Amino acid sequence: MTRRSSDSPVPSRQRKPTAVAQPAAGPDYSREAALLAAGARLVAGIDEAGRGPLAGPVVAAAVILDPECVPDGLNDSKKLDAAERERLFREILACASVGFASASALEIDRYNIRGATLLAMRRALHALGEAPCHVLIDGRDVPPLLRCPGTAVISGDALSLSIAAASIVAKVARDRMMTRACRAYAGYGFSRHMGYATAEHLEAIGRLGPSPIHRMSFRPLRRDLLDAAE
Figure 1: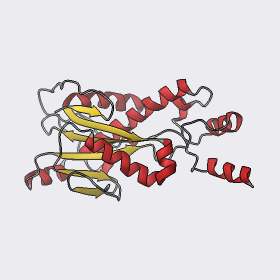
Figure 2: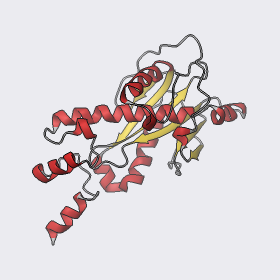
Figure 3: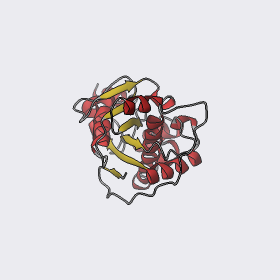
Figure 4: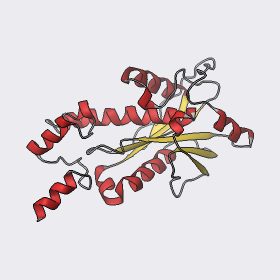
């Protein structure tokens, strides 16, 4: 299997020699196994990171795990610290098929956060080097125009190993994007808060105004625009 993003080359794959047992608690492979037993050749998990921040893109990832090569410790990215996410990110890319993509702040303002999230998810699926037969999607929505059937799984990142892997990839990829944005747009502290509405971030917006990657349809930015227009 291979991995690619919507704008990156496809690297060579490095397999692990043996499967790794998963802990009893946390996500498992039962949903994927049932689909494979029913005839699906490949099953992908999809998740996103960055729905709530005031700035930056929303990023989605699609992951097809090799059941014989599952990294140890996969879980909802929110339950892992940064070092664990980075370790698992490297291991996932080494032994799984991975695609990731984003929708920009402008697209979020144009389509709303739900629409932009579904757009990023569809892009991530199409960035995979292989076409899955079925996808498991975290949340309540199945993105439109997918190239295969999909199933929405509420709290999927805590239930499905494939979705958990996608949540880790999406989170690490987005954090790296925001760290780069911190260098491009100095003064906002993006590498510390990743665009979320912390006191530091709100103070920077008040002092500097919004940057090109701020989501102008989000409060308080939208409120500020309305107040200025009155």
